[in-house]
Image (spheres, helix red, strand yellow):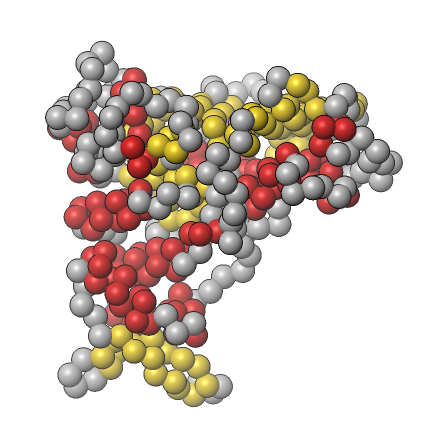
Length: 381
């Protein structure tokens, strides 16, 4: 179970010169306004639930890939081919040869800034770490120049770098080669990143972070005796009344098969489930691990959902207090003060992320119809 306290969150992320983003683009979770409603989307003074709108090809998915680049850098958790494509990694219109990734984390009352540069998905060229305003280390991988000014702060002042592999992140090297106490900044970052999760329903359980390998979802539900749980999940979230069961068959070895029971026959669930139902199956699968997740990115989460179901799903996630979450969507109906608030809704346009609250000179209030304003172009940059 993920056990970090609620005061530990991602504060800000910036990426530059990566895929479709030539200029720096930032998502700042400090961008809250003084609204007095829907405070369940605020935790520790930071935005904990954010919805990003954007036209096709605006970069919503690319932004998620960028934010989760750190997973591949610091862990052995799952990544996907889109992140590791060398051809599209660096922005095609830029003269610069490196992409820059900067993360600001909050650990209790301390701010940790971790930044690195890459030429390719697997080729890091620079790395640095700051605690508050104090530089802890930096390393230029091309000149092999270290600046280890405050390594004692992270219990690494006696670490021997003689055997350091030049394309291995310094932070990961420190985590693997020092005895870090539970309260350490290094352990915090590694723990946070190891529990990040990105997924979307547009492909068969493609995901980034949290774990490795893959499961057949229906097989996993059957093997873990979760059929009744899944049946209630579908009923409570989507109003679907399915009569599900498990049959054991020989094929040639015995396996459990998730089926839907009807009056005259049983049907294999995987063969008859609609795209929307399969998307809910994927959500159910990951929901059983949400208590382990530090940061969740649900890309095009409602691609196969009816608009009422999409609203139910987002409300379900919003009520999970422990998970900092970003959704991407095209669905204007989800822009509502009944679900979130104007500072939690963002538009991605022309390489910039701007909240509804910061996109208009109006003083947005609870009575404003955000959906209508979005459709009318009120929040266009």
